[in-house]
Length: 441
Image (cartoon, rainbow, N blue to C red; front, side, top):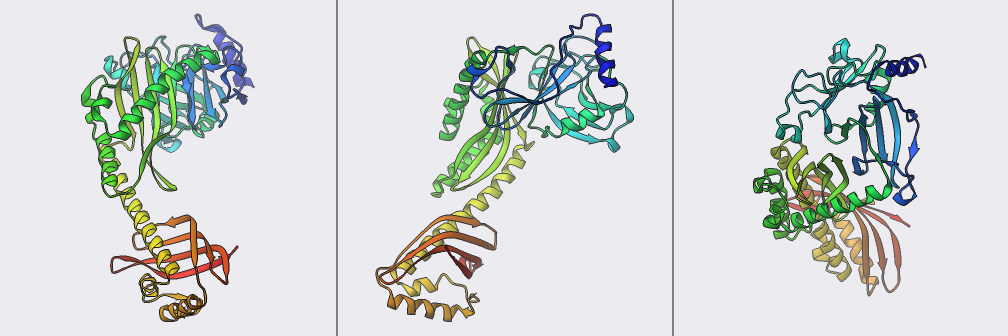
């Protein structure tokens, strides 16, 4: 309490600072339906918040806020006093004592043992200068959000955002490197739900068009959305398009999508942040985190920058795609093998059925020969066999995999239903069953 009192007394001593009633550091829910919110419920820079957090710094109020998407809408989950640059305005040059304004990301995290006492218990390095700053010729570096174990006074830093040690530790719970946006503003403008909805619709339409053209591999149409065509020649974009085309040529129906989309605005610029996801059947893999920087071209938005935020290089993304390709190939091979195994069993082709079992197969005390003889005896007594499988779950591996599924067995004299699990191994380049288990429903 003593530190809070000192903080607000200090605010009164600094000319040019407008003191407003602070937002309490408690959870403040914002309803999902924008029309249900009071005027001024939304921070204007957050047009849309995906399933993540966003940090907003209000320099005029010397406050830091954390917002979260809770599945229904945004909620304010944390507020703390902070201290920013000793000089007003947005940072332009190294050593000007100003805190930059814009949309940033934490790129590194430093613990207390890695820091001098100046930086307190914890520090995050921000990616200043960002894409927009660099285009505007702004210089400087080493802009951090960091702690302090001394009394916090307003406007005392050389450009960093400073929090008390207890609050920087709490803030760390919400920051994911290269992903959680940190929006620094001179003053947060709080807007109505209607205003936020209009901006969201406009920018969401652009994102939907970008995704449509990218999925289709329409490079020329995609390039028309960019300020400079060379941006579309980015290796990280080309690698994804090429891999999707490769899967199509092999009959593998993998799909590309974007998830956890956040849309942010600052002055005449916007940033669209999203996860890139490749899906195959019931499995999905992340293939990077991308940021599209947007600027105005007359009345329209145009993509002025395209940054693969994580992984940090196209080569690393290529390595991720290679791993996905291996996993997807295993899924495709195993799924195909399971279907052929089912058909051979249902049709009574026991020679073909036996070919799916490894030489060292064991189950229920039987080896491969005993198992096949047992299945032949059952098959000879049952007519009109129908085998239906569903809810296929594959745990892939390069040499061994496991498959579980719901199985319904029906015949002229018997029916049974339950979960079957097949343990597979690579044998002479083919997947074969080395063990199987059954649990009746």
